[in-house]
Image (cartoon, rainbow, N blue to C red):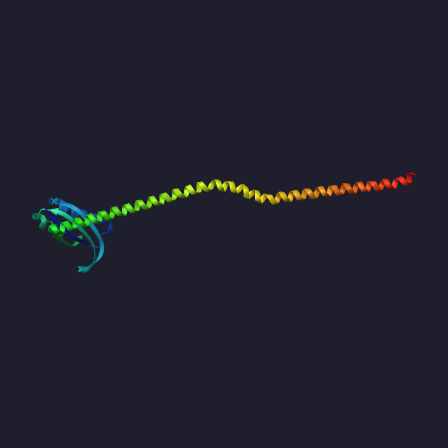
Length: 197
């Protein structure tokens, strides 16, 4: 079997949910002729270089596959009769092209692995930052608990002072009142003595 590259354009009138069925139909064409599909890439909807019938846009697909060269024409005939495929091109790959494709696939795989590694490293950094934040909160919690009563005591200190001052004033008033009563009693006793004599 030889390596082939197939580029085909699906009509833009095909609903998005039916695109996979068209791709599967093309893959079955290859498998039914003893071929093997290696890879299928979707290029998405693109503007056509020139109109094909009423269509100015199409949905592009690129498929790499292996097939016996004697069955290649049969495959093309089947693609010609598929209404959903408005244009296709089958190209047999040479050894250099195959190596280039394999190299590109390897580079893409390496890029994917690198992106995955970067994502894992980012997640690990975020987890470490969360752990550090939790540890910092746990470290500060006792200090906050110790500081809170002290702040309350500072707030309560003026209130206690005020109570003490009020009590002191009350004691002084009571003492003044008692002293006034004693003086009054002494005056009354002094007035009674001359009258008795």
